[in-house]
Length: 390
Image (cartoon, rainbow, N blue to C red; front, side, top):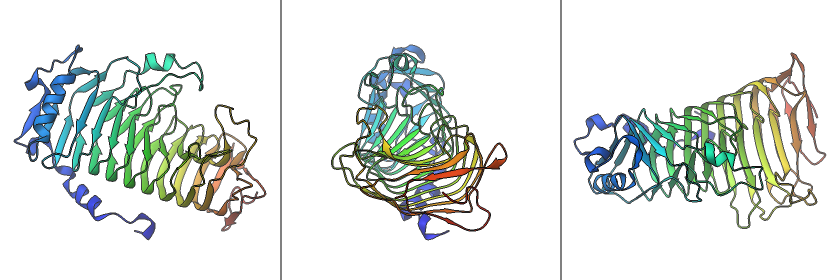
């Protein structure tokens, strides 16, 4: 294993402990023991809160969502807990159709969280999506599952469907593994990112299937040592770093690896996007995209330092976000466009050390082209590359 994919000792421990299940527990607190009803109509907010309180206060305690459909208006689960705490979803948790800014389910300051199961979180997002006439007029909508200030967490096995906005948001957290997740929403559902990571360190996303109306995975500011591997992405907007530079005080992003992933019919492939003009001068560095398979992907390789989705910035300024040390290694497959690489870098902070190595992307079986702005600083390394030059 190369040094760019160094695993935290805590993560190794989490992987060894991933077989820890409800069946091994003697301290299981089922939502039904606290008045929970699986009729899909009764709000089980209080029953779930009571089950969490018991589990969190018990060393090795577990919340159980058994088979059935349980409506929950909102859930806020705060630690720290007495010990490792399991939240096992074997049935389905159903959100109401209510629109609001607060996340639907939040885990805050839970150290040693195990969120797992073969069940489903259903965000019930259709009504919220219908209220979004376009990007500027989309009312506040909740993230489905927010993991905030969590250390040494494991999220695995569950399905997350039809969120009103982000499906899963990892924020201000450290040593978190996500694996064997199934995340889905319609291709036209707005801003339904599969997994969004912000201001977190040592985050691992593995062996998951993600298809939504926005980025399969998006990396926000302040992220370090985020490793994505064996993810099947599509439909959606691909795997993105950014957008960055929209707000003041944003933090640097470094140590990002994306390996052994498949992208199918996504609107973008591997993307880095920064606002122009930007409100911060953070740096993106140490990024590797390696062994990526593309199937009819729009914009397979894209660096966009003039990102402005609302049109409010008028494309009149330059980005102050610096991008350097980005490698695309063995990115292969098919593009739906003749231009396979579109690299538009800031004149104020020109890109540095952008490398394409062993890239082979075809359009209708024919060679593709690359566009690079004069300040892009792009190098093509190795024989028989396609595209082979800007």
